[in-house]
Image: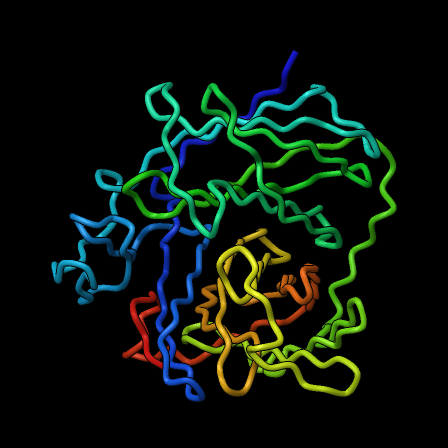
Length: 317
């Protein structure tokens, strides 16, 4: 018997593919940063002809020039995400098969490739002490499967980031319970420096993160006393790096694709809507190996700015 989880992805779980444009001062080039967020669709605008293009009120589609229109229940992607687990009761330390079906009207929805994969699955435990970014593989019947071994018992949250063909990217959120003892401990003390595989990774402006404004995530990387630059970082899944943020309180989720600039090998812009404590994981690649740095930050309330209504469009840096 398989265990089945169902979620209808409607306005409450539609994700804006939030495209931010930045200028690299050293090479005078433009790069796209993306942010996918598990959030409400109110205030999200999309192009009627190119639904993958999203932004804020007043923006125009960069492909056809049409005014963006608000995402609503009528024009939001409605995809039902079903999760089957084998075995039904998952045991810690034992491999389990996860099968995802992305359906509309009980039919599989074709997905576009986004950052080299059709599905990005990010899993965290309830204490946000364990993180995985994996990619279920497409099957002949249109479903997607992956095998995973959960290290401890307890609750796990699964975020699947996918893009239905011709629609904006979507993030679906699921929870599963894994049977077994838990050695995982919650540690939400501030952490702005992470040492991984000999690299010292620092979130330089981690003490200054606030709501109600667009802001940078400035990440430096040092190895053997040398500060890494853009040329030292290899592309990983069609991006400079991958950043996942999850809130302690409500497990709100952001998936950010950063760039490099002349100061930081990993640089992104984001907009955090809620105050609170967040765990951050940064995946970057050097010499063919992916490294995962982790941080813990506290996001304070910021002053509201009339020019920044909390939604992303195309910004220049």
